[in-house]
Length: 108
Length: 123
Image 1 (cartoon, helix red, strand yellow):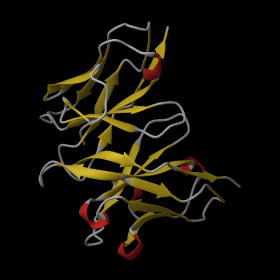
Image 2 (cartoon, chains in turn purple, yellow):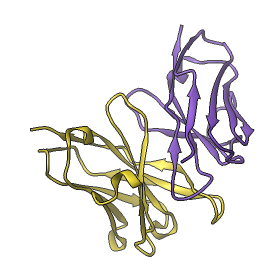
Image 3 (cartoon, each protein chain N blue to C red):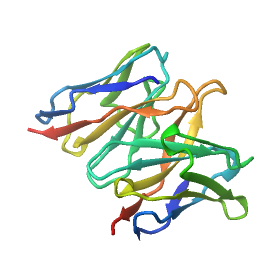
Image 4 (tube, chains in turn purple, yellow):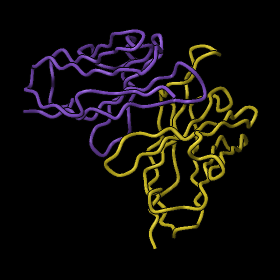
């Protein structure tokens, strides 16, 4: 099975900082990658699919890039409402759908 | 607007079964696969399986084979997930999520999620 490894597992940054989260697949998955945001006590929310396509309604400070095995989620200017745990998910093939372990983002 | 509304919290004893419902509205229920994802307290997301509401076909993650059953009732646009032989480590939030697939050779990502159902397994 393809494993998804996120790094870092947690980070602390200041408001306005540029934040980058990495997701690495153990095998190539083309661009079949999604990113989710889960705020404390809330339901996961789709941010990005196809590695770089922003879901409707998601602020433009979020962006995604990558293909193959290495992917990044970038928040261009961290806002207080971005405090959350972020998960990547690969969906290159049915049936196995795997999530990364998550990256917790906090405000310094 | 698309909504997935799940049934309420459950407390079960080890060895029992639990059945969680997920009522869909705002879209054609049979047009999208429904997936189930769980999240133990303080832990990450774990995909459990899917049901095709149109055909009733299912596919389960290997880890849950033999313990999970996903069904649906198209007349009321509701999907169900039943987990049997519950253990304490099954304590988790269980989410239904609508799957979106780019092409028939790929898997799904999830654009709408239910609010989650907390299942607590305790003696």
